[in-house]
Image (tube, rainbow, N blue to C red; front, side, top):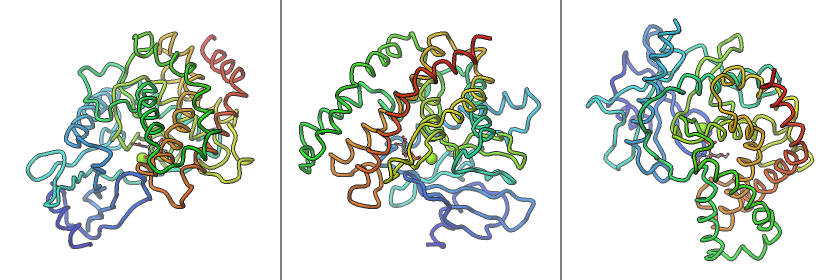
Length: 364
Ligand code: GN1
Ligand code: MG
């Protein structure tokens, strides 16, 4: 394995000599390796095998990443910051491309490893939630004047109209005969369809504008420095043009959950209002000046929207026979569906309060 990886890594323009290459993390999607170089003075790197089943146009994905990080770096330079620490840096291949394709057709990409940075798996204090909100807020602020079009590398990703098309198809096919078993869960989706489509129409007709969005705003996609300040937003694979609300909603879905995404004990799962407030404060401290009124009006709703979408995606994958998400037990996707639905109910119960928080943060 290691010799192969060394050979793969050898196709990139790395500085210094490779000391070791080790697997890193437990990503659902890509395989990531940490490449350490011998000398302290040369950078370390992250090497990734990109998942080509999910990302069907990796060259376009890498081009999106390159253009967005170039834009970020210019901004950071203007603000007197350090572009090598405050934005991701893609390492090109020896043939000057943003990726390397091996003999088996697998796509590999490399980026700088940002030293002396910290990641967290959970936002277990309001301070951390505030900092995470600032991180995504800053990312959106710096890209708010990005010009040009990003390739739509995940068509329909957070588009509920598209998800309903997939949903109807999976239900009609019922490929592994699981539909009968999940009638109640199907009802959870069906009963909220109209509410979700009504929101999405505002995105489709431009009332809610399209912006550069990250689309995977979990806390572990943010690097912090040793003082707990935000350094940099990472994992830009899903950078797309979409509504900024998706990034806010997805962050609330992951940050505020008092339980796990796949918690078997539903009593653990709820939306924590203090974390919501802290995240919203941090996020709005960076974005309030440019977000439009319709965006602010729907900010709290976006948490409902994205959590609902996640219930749908887990349930749909279960009915479809578990083709998308990696599972660790036969009913894993159903367990995830139940846990995310509990979170959705908790958001619905606290929705009026969430709206009040947003409005108190935006009206004074
Ligand atoms: C996937 O594996 P991860 O955490 O990067 C998924 C997200 C889901 C998430 C649920 C490209 O992201 O949309 O919200 O799982 N990413 C893709 O845990 O589908
Ligand atoms: Mg990720």
